Image (cartoon, rainbow, N blue to C red; front, side, top):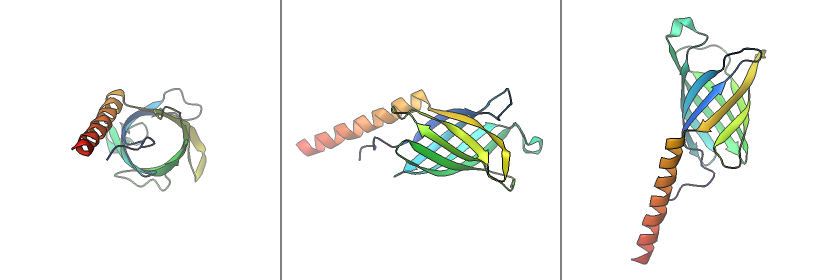
Length: 142
């Protein structure tokens, strides 16, 4: 089966910042898209929980519809009582998501984020899709 043209599955690199703070926080996402429902695993350097080691892990749950992408990020290993919500827009090439994040219970904790498809992962995804199309074409000729 060929990959859907609107499928966001793949490795993504990103960064988020806190409004008014100088240093953005980088992160990496292994994103899975099942018909518009998003799930994924996030890793990022620990920038706010000294009791949790140098790397934080989180799970992502959300969706996308057209250019709109939204998801909730839940950190693994601790419960902070509130979870950041991300809302962004996907570019036309489907390689970049840009938007804002916020904590619903703490309106002053907010900022911007950007995510970009990891180039090698995007190329591998495209190659897999091309191979599947070629395999389907060969089967139909037989």
